[in-house]
Length: 175
Image 1 (cartoon, rainbow, N blue to C red):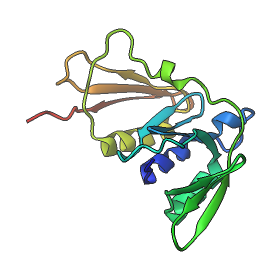
Image 2 (cartoon, one colour):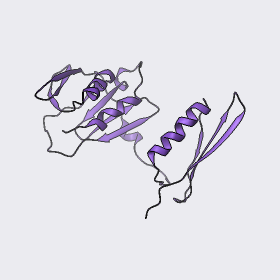
Image 3 (cartoon, rainbow, N blue to C red):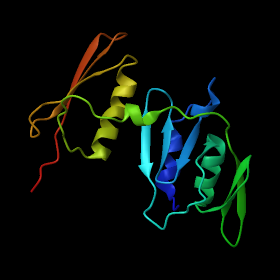
Image 4 (cartoon, rainbow, N blue to C red):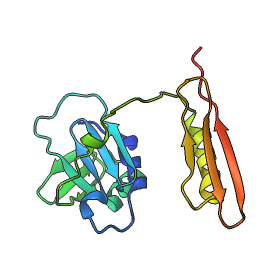
């Protein structure tokens, strides 16, 4: 299995403290890594490579994953019952496994019903969400059009100041 920084960055969505330890870590499987905090879910495929038949899925604690990300160490050297060793010729970092069963996220990731598909620039989406996270402490409404060429609209209200906001993010057009 080959993993890279993207398989580790997903730890950013994990809660700092959780009453359910098994969802406070990143789940490593032969073909992907998964992270969830029960409200958000991100899966990232592993880098295509030769299959390692001895690979056994495991959950790593957030702090360990972030230490590996900071050290830019993504190669698995060995696994024991309680830890996984990552490293290269220069150094090895052992990260504790979390025991327990990871949630059945495959069921959540199944697309059922009708969906509109819209291509967006993630940088622009992040900038808009940064604004809305400051503007409104409530949820915001997102209106996704059925027509791929129409913008996605974001609607929010600031209960304290009684202000309303409407944003539009234009889809990326195929050339």
